[in-house]
Image (cartoon, rainbow, N blue to C red; front, side, top):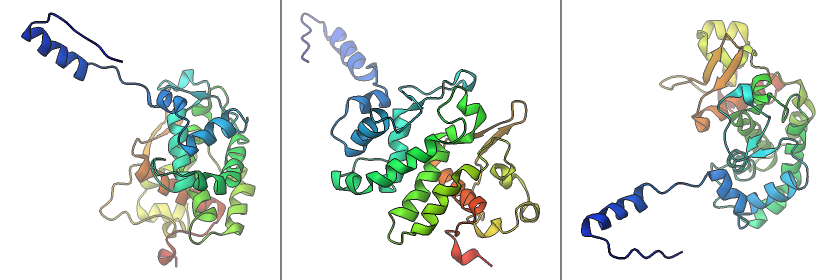
Length: 251
């Protein structure tokens, strides 16, 4: 598109320069991905998850900050971020190649089929009923699938355990494990024997995973997903008795 502005005074030209460069409305990230057919991960989302019907949750373009009005949707930008972890173990999909996706598509499809079968996922009010509706928890699961299925040391047995026993994981907001960092080291070990061997060291680190609202009984994980989802993955490993990624810490 080309614009021509004729007959402007120098002052009006300066104002136009400001308006065009500072007041331009940004396009929603989800809407950008909706029109993008060049990235293979995005194509996987469209053809397999959306059009193929693998994903039971509908895909939205905007976040739903008021969980009371949550229709059970998941945004396209969150799907991109979750699949970036699933396919590439990265925070974005810019480096994805068709070969990356084609070789991993069957297992990635199975991952989303399992997620879609979990209680409340994709249903009305999902975010108030299960923490699994929060993207950071899905990133944690995606990381586990990547580690067991696509890493340099894959483990088919542990991957099968993850899929077969996923429905036994307590994804309720009231699961006390999500708030284990609120306890002292001694109390945490009493409440969750052996958990210390699964969690990373807290020395010099901020382990604020989020906040539990006792009024409505909802656990909201924080916005720093890259810091939080690996720890949530450790907790899921603990609940399913899968090997710790911190083997050196095990007693």
